[in-house]
Image (tube, rainbow, N blue to C red):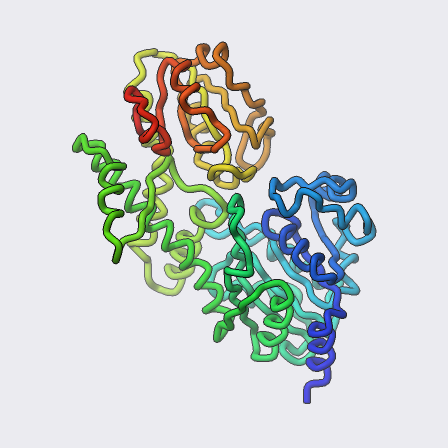
Length: 431
C-alpha cells in the first residue's frame, strides 16, 4: 500500500485540502471561485501586483456574472500573494499560466519559469496539476523543472494534467453540463486529479495518459481553427466570384446532417484557437512530419486581418482616410483581447500610416504592453464623432452596439462579422 497516496486521497475526498492556484486570469480566477463555492480553502498566486491589489479590495478585473461579487481575497488577504512561498502549505497546486506563441513556435517560458519557482517550495505529498494549453509531452517537461531526487513521481509526489475548458462570454457555460478531462503521469496521479475535479464538475473523463489529454485540447481548438479557416477562404473565393458568402452558409446550414455552421471573420482571437495549430505543427515537425493541412489553416487565419484592410482601403476614395474600429475583444460581449484580430488590424493601419481610433464598451483604454506599442482611449459613439471618420470598421460584433444608428450616421461602414446582413442596410461593404 502507498501510504502517501492514501493520506493525500483521504484529504482530497474529505475536502480537507488546500488548493493553490498559480495565475488568476481568465482560467485561474473562475477556477478558484469554483473551489471557494465548495468550501475548499484556496491560495492564490498572481505575479501581476495590480491584480493582487484589486482582488484584495474585492474588485474582479474579469467581466463575468459569477465573479461580480467575488470578495474571497478581500476577506482572506493572507491567501493571495505574488510570492511562491505562499504555496508551501498547499496539498494541490494548479498551474493556469499563458502559453503564447513566439515567432510561431511555443513560448513555454511562463510555465517553465513557474516550474523553477515551484522547486523552491514543492514538498512530498503534493499533487501538481497543469491546466495550460501545451504541446504533447509538455507536462512532463514542466515537471523536470522541479523534479528532485527526494521525489518519486506517483509515490510521494503526483503530477496531473487537465486542459481548461472555460468559455468567456458564454452565460450558459457550466461544468454541470461540460465534462472535464483528467489525466496523470501514473494511475495514482490520475485518480487523485480526478478526485480533485469531482468537487467542482459533474462529470470527469479519464485519459489514458498525459499526452492523450494534452493532444485532445489541441484537437478541440484545431477543429474550430481548420473549419473557420475553410470558411474564411470561402469568403475570399466568394468575394472574387461576386457571391454572397453569408447566403451560401445560410443555405448549406439547412442540411440537418453532416454539416456544422461556421462564420467568417477578420481573423482568429483568444488564447487557444489562433495558437493551438502551431503548437501541434511544431511538435509534429520535431518528430519528423511537417503537417500541411494544420499549418495552412493557421497561416490562412493569420492572414485575414491583412485581407480585411486591403479590401477596405480598395473601397475608400480618400487617400488619407480616418477609420473608427468597432470592437477590440477577440469575440463579442467579453473583456478579453488576447490575440484579437483588432490588435493586428491596428498594427497594420499604423504601419500604413492610416489614422484610426476605436470604440469598445469593454475596453475604455488600451495600454502599451506585449501586443501594443501605443496607448489609446475608446471614442464615444455619437452622431458628432461618427461623422469625423471616413469609415467605420466592425471587427467585434458586441450586442451593446446600436448598429442601425451607426450606419445612419457614418459615411461608410465595413463589416467583417456579417452583423449587418439582416438589418436592411444595403450600402454596407463586407470584408
